[in-house]
Image (cartoon, rainbow, N blue to C red; front, side):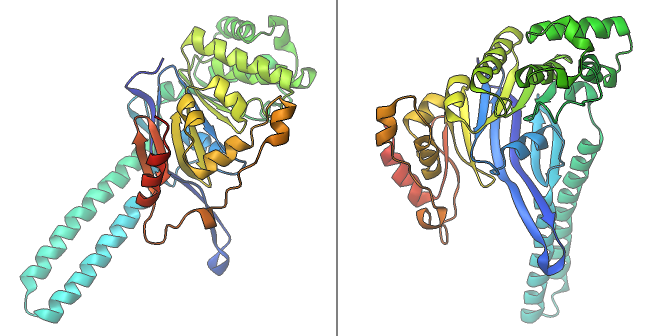
Length: 371
């Protein structure tokens, strides 16, 4: 299953959206300083309520959005990067230099050597940051097509994500044509092969999306992702629009593909019962932050963050007696946390178990851990 070298590494990822102008300007921190690794052959799930930043994280990783800040590495190569923190660092250095020069002039107006030395040191630090900004811009501009083919995405809505004016063959073959394949016989062979892989028939290739059920349309979306032989798939809530029986079929299909083709999967969902069955590790997101990350057994056994506990308390069980007695845990961050003097960060509280907390909370969580 998992190996020590990550297939995908996300470092300090931020995705901010701006709305309005001037005094009415609003900045939405959809993803705010997220870090995690995904290892070869595993299923890593991101869970959380609607609007917490799960889908935005996936779309930023696959470069549908340019990140505001942070870096994304795939198979050891940086494929996406933003530079907000670097720009802020340059601004902070200039302000610090200005304040220190003012202090020098106040205490010793004739000490020009100290001022020149300070300017030179600051300029050197600024140049390092500028070089890193340029390097990140170049990485964003120079797309490695062969590498990016190995990353594919299955979208949430099986209706909206398929072009109604294209046949199934055209939809699935589009990725091959973009990648440079021109031989129609090769394309037809690959399309038919991938249709059979996802449980459809070659004769379905000539039909249009509206002629299929929701589950079949989602299989077409999976086939489109598989046809270019990816090594990493981002599955963005691929079962949320489907009936329960069809959900099981799609999950079992993804499980079979993972085992047969050794595909690594990042699974985005809000249904914890599905995630528990399907995942190896789980990351919990809340308002753009990753608040807890652990193996699935550890997370369900030792949920530490109050939001994780709240999510788990909402999972329905097919047991009427349990449901009668089930108590929902409400999470209100304004009353649960006090971060005014002790800001939080992501800590590894136990090997492989990370939680977003300040020092006071960390000590409390350590006492809660089940041996």
